[in-house]
Image (tube, rainbow, N blue to C red; front, side, top):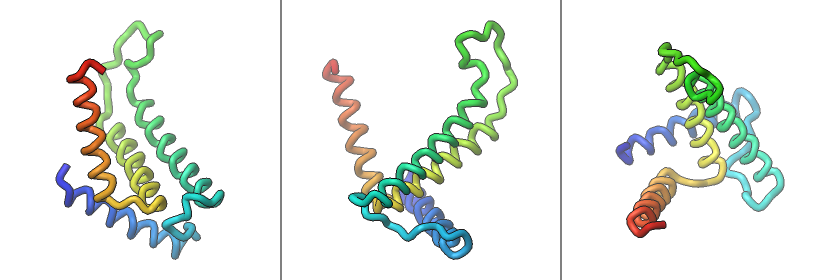
Length: 123
């Protein structure tokens, strides 16, 4: 993913969150991550994100260990839609927690480098 694409995703989500503030009483952000209220909001958004990921996984019918048959019917568009919902909530969590797209990108690249080094060194 190009860095500008990640930035665009953050900008779109931020604008949506501002709309939610005007129309649906979405809380002020970013939050104080040391406060109970801030941590509670972050936890709720994380749960919403995990719910969407769980919905995506429901489309993987052949992943059930007890299934003897294979279902060849797979709706990639529905799977992708749920993954997109998951990502919307994940980016919302980043914005609420005052994590910028640059910080996320940097942490992602740094952690990827660490993971690669671990594999190469027998971790």
